[in-house]
Length: 231
Image (cartoon, rainbow, N blue to C red; front, side, top):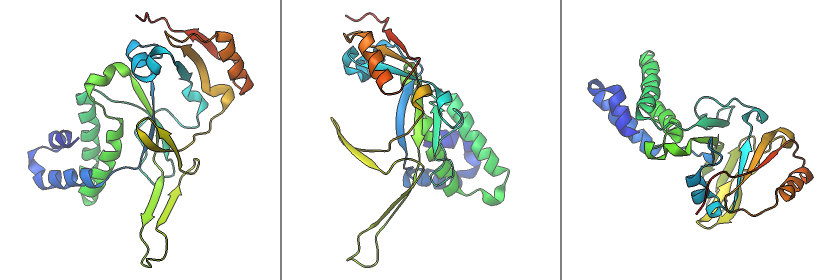
C-alpha cells in the first residue's frame, strides 16, 4: 500500500507521503474477516481449505443479508460496521481506488489530513491482495466494531474494554493455529444458504446432508457433488 500511495500522490508532496506512510503503520483497523469465494468447486480451494477434499463448500446468497455487496470496508465506529466486499487483485485497480481517495481530499485542501487519509487507506487495504492469489476469486465479510481499550488511572481498577457493534459479544475459540477471537453473525436461515457441494473425497450421503439442513430450518438448498477429479 505504501508504494501505491507514492505512485498516487507523486513527487510534489513528499512530506504528506511520509506522514501518510507513518499513519499506515500506526493505524491498525480492528477488523474481523470471513473469507468466501466465487469459485465453489475449485481444486486448489479443496486442497487448501476443506480437509484435503473431504469437506464441504457452502454457497451463500448475498441477498439474504441486510446490506449491499458493494463498496469498501466501513471505518471503525461508523453506523454501518459490517460489509461484504470483493477482493481487488489487480495493482492498477488498487491504484485507481487510492488515487480517487487522495484526489477527493485534494479537492478539499482544508481537510487534507495525512492521518485521516492513512486511516482510511489502511481500512481500504483490507480488500487488497496480491495478484498471485487471484484464482481464489475471494469475497470478504468484514466486521469493524468500535473497540475501546484504556488503562485506568487507579491501578486497582481493571482496564476498560468496551465493544460497540451490532453483532454478538466478542467470543473465542481454539484453532490449530492458536486462540482466535470472533463474532457470531446471525442471518435468515431460509434464504442464506443456496447450495452445498460435497468435496471430491467426501463420502457422505447427500440425503444425510439434506436432513441436517432441513432439521436446522434450511429449505430449497441444492446438494451437489464436486466435479473436480482428485487423484
